[in-house]
Structures are given as structure tokens and as C-alpha cells.
Image (cartoon, rainbow, N blue to C red; front, side, top):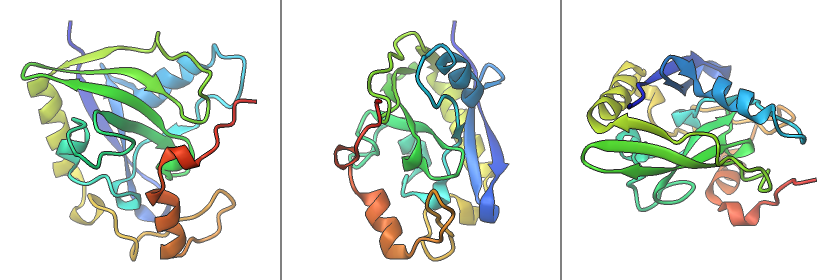
Amino acid sequence: MASQLTFQMETIQNGAVSLVPEIDGTRLTELVADFEAGFSDSPTGGYGGIVPQHFKFGDLSKYYLGLDDHQWPAPGEVWLLGCECGEVGCWPLSAHVAVTEEMVVWSGFKQPYRTKRDYSRLGPFEFTRSQYDAAVQAAIAEMPDDQTTFDSHRSELRDSDGNLLTEEQARERYDRPFSDRQPDDQ
């Protein structure tokens, strides 16, 4: 049976809006935190929604389908959650997204900084394509116009210590691929 997708919007630091997916009425942040509680390493949880104003997700209707050739983290994959601090690259949760005319499926969840974790029992989550598309469009329509795209001039991006990032620092941080980052699998 197909799940129902909705999105909750939360206002975070500096008035930016984050999008948190809900599956059958349960926030994905809660589902993942409960799942990760079974791992022996830490941290677990600590996720928030993605913040379109803080990162170049592009057209969100294409992003959530994994259809953009320049998709982050890769075509066919989506960052469904980022760090609770508002920076997606700080602590992202990605999933493979498979799309047909009738269905959208999230599977193959990954946490790039915990590569030894096995997320194979999380999901898959299946949605009818029409309901999925409608949920994404409803979220986009509900967002304030100035919140749907990355704006390095209006957005105050901060590092993990709370220091304000310059535009150059933000672009360097967000524009490099994950292969340049080091996982923390201790």
C-alpha cells in the first residue's frame, strides 16, 4: 500500500524555512532518529529539513524526483534531511529515488559521515506519483517566494561554531562534492 507524503515547514535561524517530509503523518526526522537509535555509534538523529534558501537545490519539483543532471548528491538521489542547524552538508540523509509514471520510491538511505551504518531496513517508502507530485507542489506553493531558492546575499550561513560565513566560504563549502569530505566512522 502506498504511503502518503506531506511536508512540514519550520522557520529556523534568520527566518529561513526548512522542509521536513512526513510519511503517513510521522516526520521523517522522527522515523530516522528511532531507526538510528539501534546503532551503537553516535551521534544519532540530529536531523532537520532541507533549507532551499541555504543551498542550490534548483527546481524543487525536479529535485525531489532526482531528475536534475546536476542533482545533489547525485542524479537519482536526494538529500531528504539535513542537519538540524540548517546546513544540509553538515549532517545529510540521502536516499535513492526511483520514479515511474505511477510510483515514486525512496530507498537506499545513506548517511555519508557514517558509511558503516546499514540503512537497508529503513524503508523503502512508496508513494503514488500523483500524490507525491501534489505534496511537493503544495509545499512549494506554501513557501514564501523568497525562500524557494538559494540566495547567498540574504542568507546568513554559519559554520558549526556559529560564525558567519562569507559568500566565498559558503560557495566553497557547498560546491565541493562529498568525495572531498572525510567520513567520521570512528
